[in-house]
Length: 166
Length: 288
Ligand SMILES: Cc1cc2nc3c(=O)[nH]c(=O)nc-3n(C[C@H](O)[C@H](O)[C@H](O)COP(=O)(O)OP(=O)(O)OC[C@H]3O[C@@H](n4cnc5c(N)ncnc54)[C@H](O)[C@@H]3O)c2cc1C
Ligand code: FES
Ligand code: FES
Image 1 (cartoon, each protein chain N blue to C red):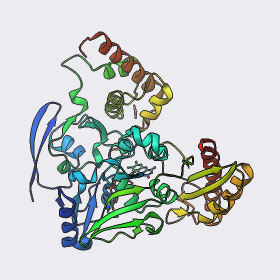
Image 2 (image 1 turned 60 degrees about the vertical axis):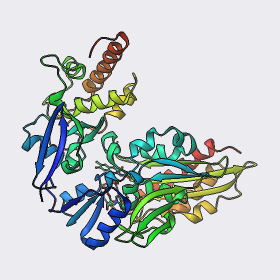
Image 3 (image 1 turned 135 degrees about the vertical axis):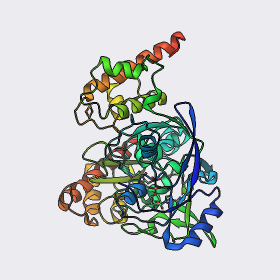
Image 4 (image 1 turned 60 degrees about the horizontal axis):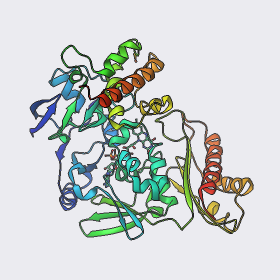
């Protein structure tokens, strides 16, 4: 039984025909749309490597069925940079050495973008760590990740205040 | 990991969902946030032939007051429980508990209805529901009924819910004036299920405990309502001695398994510790 779903991914509309309802959003992105920036770590909701923004909220795409997402707006790591200009979270990750092997990084960055959108972390490291607790890093880059999120958030707040475009 | 194959449905009304359950019998399962069921399906521990996604049913959403009761739609996510200002002011223990569940990504999808209907003893909301004497509003082919949480859980993944019924909302009566509730959870790391956890509600009058209810998470195949432990505190002064008594009585009804979270004896003792801590915190928040 084929099902078609309309999705907006990084601002581009996709009409996807699913021949099998088992396809997760993660497998749709990686295997069918060649958007391989989103990573598959555990495939069961425990590591956060597959984090994307779905309708404004960060979710684990490995536990989301694509067929449930009709009409959804999706943002993935591929949609963050504007041409060659990195998103403030991406730039801050580089500045703070917030990765080693890089496998968890797309998920960490999308989770940080989601956390900043939620506006709950403030300038408090403890709250940033709690807010980023859905993302594991086997290389243990947590210290740099926390600093990167903190700085990206401060810069984005500053830009918002001064009205500069993001 | 890929689940067994299934046919997928996305009804828009409660009646449609119930009709689909009735048509497909035991081969059908509801899915809400999918954060308990999809992992089980990937591990092939659950293999429904028909998967009915309730995520599009508007009538299952929303946090409302009905008189002094709270009426919380089954599809309310843990993140929505955390964000709701009125709930945070009126019944803060739900926010407090939701914040102890998993991590932000999971909480953006996981629903209250899924958490209570799942029947996994590791889920955190069921003990809170036993503690608060919540009722689960359910609709089936024959109409609606309301099931007390305290009679809902019969074994691991075994509940009073019939195969063709759907939980539509959770009804929680306001606590007696001045009383307070607390949830204490011991876990190995952020995002983990409980090694042991306790939900308590406690009221004070003239310096004495006049109301107390205690429930436990992950210390038996079902969540436990520690009725005797709560009753034993009525008329006593709040304090270390009373709380230790309740902790001991609560430990007596536990039956945890030994697993990666620790040997059974340790988990039982930690159950007692969680009861003591939760009572101490609730007593501080309660007003005489
Ligand atoms: C990494 C990870 C960590 C987690 N940690 C915790 C934790 O610490 N504590 C905790 O409590 N939970 C934890 N969970 C589980 C999470 O909270 C689930 O989301 C929740 O248990 C189920 O909600 P759901 O909406 O995802 O339900 P689903 O997975 O969609 O459904 C679960 C079950 O409930 C049934 N169901 C769902 N909705 C209804 C309804 N309206 N009526 C009748 N039946 C229904 C389904 O048929 C299924 O059997 C964790 C999950 C993950 C992936
Ligand atoms: S791959 Fe989705 S959480 Fe690990
Ligand atoms: S950078 Fe290697 S897992 Fe995080």
